[in-house]
Length: 165
Image (cartoon, rainbow, N blue to C red; front, side):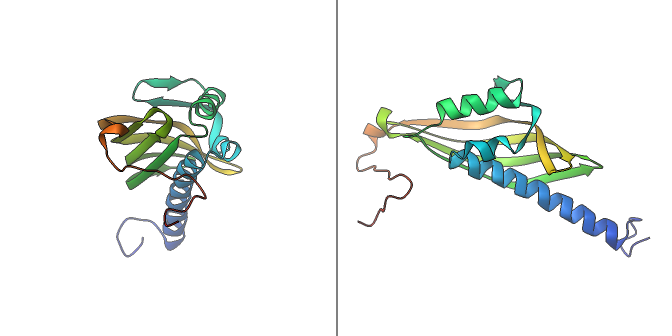
């Protein structure tokens, strides 16, 4: 028995810590590849049979999800997705996690901005290549939309553009 009285050993604790960190890294990679539109790397985050439900926008598998994101989050659309406060549970080769999301979407060509928050509820599975998303989805706590014409002086620069020039 460990000093904490949990019955785990330091080897168990190290493996559990590693699993938690690997799940965090997977979620962060999912968000980074979504925001940078690195679609092949985004796809690699998921099992082929992965499902998703974004507040009622439902996908039956990885192909449908990635195809939708590729078609609808392309050039000219700036996104920001950040998660924090992970609550991760590991059970052998399966894991669940809840994350608090803050996001923003700006479509300058349409004079539109959305920002909001939600709670993700995810399921993960360990594979020979590491952890992968089996299901992801969120329920909104709020969503606010803006007409950029109502924000005098609002300007946005995309990747590689300098704001100080």
